[in-house]
Image (cartoon, rainbow, N blue to C red; front, side, top):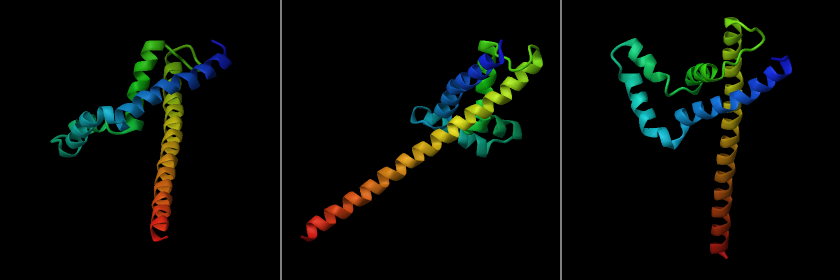
Length: 132
């Protein structure tokens, strides 16, 4: 596969990886299982149990496992055509997917701040109207 095609695959394949990792570790649809995992992460009796359940609460950690799944599904290799290509692709996909998730997190944070500022302004306007 040409290097240009590999780079395109890298940036496109990182999108569903980021989507799955973010959804499982942040969104409401998986809240109950995530809360159970967080509880077991803190209250587990063994370090293996605690680390296993931690994987489902951390988007960075979980993205490694999602990446392994996507590498198995697609056979994507980066730069080299042997097993080393899988390793390079794996860490590259994790990095790009986590950049996407960081950007998405910043975007959502900005939206929350804008909504909060709009609510404060609305309240101030309503108070000013009541004083008149």
